[in-house]
Figure (cartoon, rainbow, N blue to C red):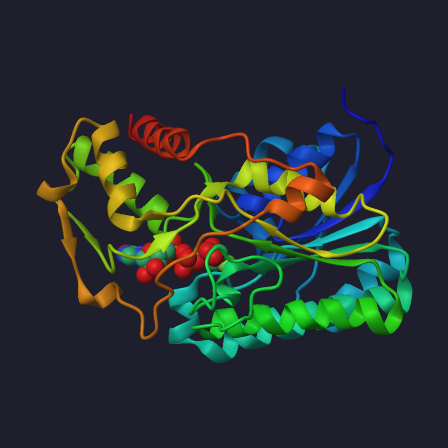
Length: 327
Ligand code: G4F
């Protein structure tokens, strides 16, 4: 049975994979759901609001930017929130090597502006920061847990470490309820096509439908702990329902290589990945994160959270969704 509530939540990154699933989850729980949207998104709703089009009429969308403190200040001055989920970021690791300055500026300043505006106007609002397993980077222990030392390997990873410590600092210095989720990779049919899982499943669909002959990828040996976004947004919500704010690793505890993902995804369409996948140095990163696998024991114990979907289910659903999209 679900608890009905009249709480108001504010989501940055509501148009993304996680934001759209979180918005649906909170609506189901009876929340009034608000989201931060760039002004241009209103001009191209089909493209920019695609993931939330079905629920758009039930949402309260506010125009503003993470790069503008005044725009956030104005939103918080007008509307009171019980919870703020900060998911928006430049989240593509490869892009952070291409333009580290924009990544740093959006990810670090954006987080700081939000925290500062909340402290000023709504110190009772609970804050969630989307930390990342990329913070572990060149891992110091396996599996990685809340106490594992950070060693980021990209400007993106560095920006997330900064956001993590800003969140912790506002908790300790100003007594804000501010929680860090250290989420390992999480995917689904709404994943952006630039990330490797969706790049593979759209590639499989195109090849299966005769629209393409090969799929060019980078490092096939990188290993990730891939979960399902719909499971992970439940964990975000649970973190803000606790008595005190804390930091939590959210992961499945399993690790698979990009090669294994390819193998499973091509097999789902009756194909052999070895006939189609070509390794291309263009997609290698200047510094790679070789292995990620998380230990979510703390989340199991304190949040009562467990992932519900398995890795094979995730791969199968993503491939089938892309096949269906192509008709
Ligand atoms: O799918 P990816 O681009 O995700 P990455 O870099 O692990 O980051 C994702 O997960 C993080 C959580 O750990 C988030 F914080 C972050 O925002 C993002 O959601 O790449 C996964 C792996 C990498 O090792 C990459 O080198 O796949 C390898 N890879 C191999 N070929 C490729 C490709 N990645 C991409 N994007 N494209 C390729 O062609």
